[in-house]
Length: 232
Image (cartoon, rainbow, N blue to C red; front, top):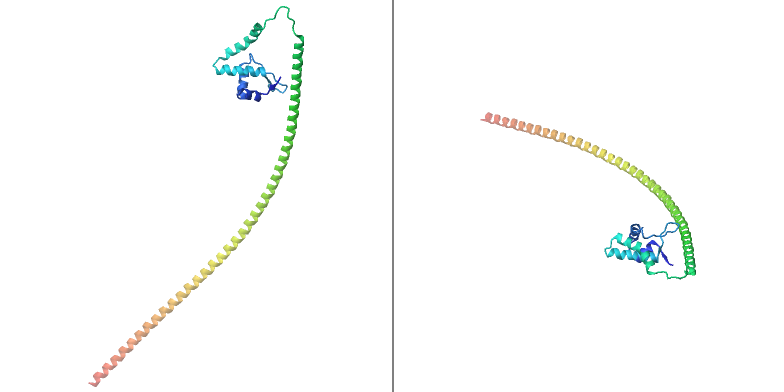
């Protein structure tokens, strides 16, 4: 007899897995889901048929109590529909075949669980190995990043030192230029004052010369005037 997992059963019924879990809780009085040793749910064709009826009845608007009552009454109806005739002999081999089928299903289920467990273990080991490799790669990358970071820091420190030296040299050169300009300005001021003094002295000498020339001219005119009166 074929069995299904929770996801497979939900897919066949066309509902979400959490809806199937919800129905399992709501109809726990009449529906029992077997589980594996690991706790995984096992769905048979009979259970899928029951949940299919639940889905249809809920879609039709039937109340949950009515559905539970129907499932509780269903075994009694089956016994009434199949009366045992007087003198009928129970088919013992059929029971034996049923027990053998059940044992086979249990063995298959156990083998499936063992295979799944082995696969999970192998997958876990592979994942752990992959995680260790990734961790190793991450550590290597981190070490390389740290070395690169240190190299960049050293380069930046060297660049800052060189820039500071160049800045100091530029400041010193500017100070020399400012000192030279101030000295030149002082020299030009002194030269301007000297030239102004020379101009003032020349103007003074020129005025004295003009004054003496005027005095000389006035004296010469007076002499000519005296000679004229003497002549007359």
